Amino acid sequence: MLEIACFEITSAETALQSMADRIEFCHDIEKGGTTPDFYEFMHLKRTFKKPIYVMIRPTGGPFYYSDSEFTQMKNSIINFRLGGADGFVFGILDAHNEIDIPRNQELLTLAGEIPCTFHRAFDRTSDLDASMQTLIKIGFRTVLTSGGKKNAVAGKENIKDLVEKYAHKIEILIGGGVRSENIEALKKFTGGTSFHSSAIMKYDTFVTEDEIKKLKQGCS
Image (tube, rainbow, N blue to C red):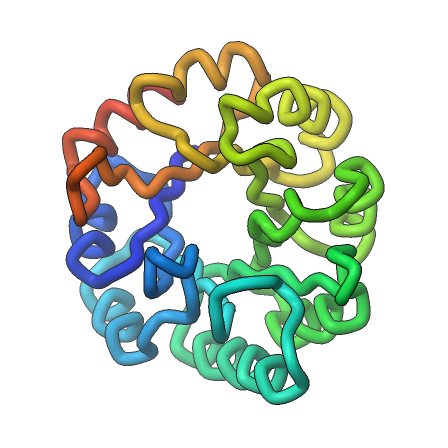
């Protein structure tokens, strides 16, 4: 399974017409992804059939949110759910960089049956095993991770361990610097079957269809 992270509508349109299985639609690559524009999302839903997972993140920086920001997140879940989102991507930590169970549960409840991914806020937690068990228990379907390291290549040992222990209970989505030149080796080493990439080559601004094709071939 190949998910492409798309930070603006041009890349989203390219990815939705490509060999990718689904996209994560968000905004602002410099901040690592924030909640996208609702009307751009609606255009994509009307035009394309592939699944669109929506990032729910009101601001960049730490994954600890104020009450007003949390209210924004709840409103976004409601609006994008009504708009037909196929999945949501979010993750709330507490002031100690541990999973904020009550707030995440509240968003999961609002999402209902729509599958939710806990994003790379996971990698900031102190105990990846304990965090993974928590996310499984409260109902996340997917965890996006680089194994607690700056990228998936650096975290491949941890990813392998997580895949062996938990892949039968939750989708482990391997991301963080995943590109066509390393995806095959990552798949072989970790045993993972789900991958996440921006498919943006060095010095480029937009997703490239050729890179998506190579990524898909590498993880197939």
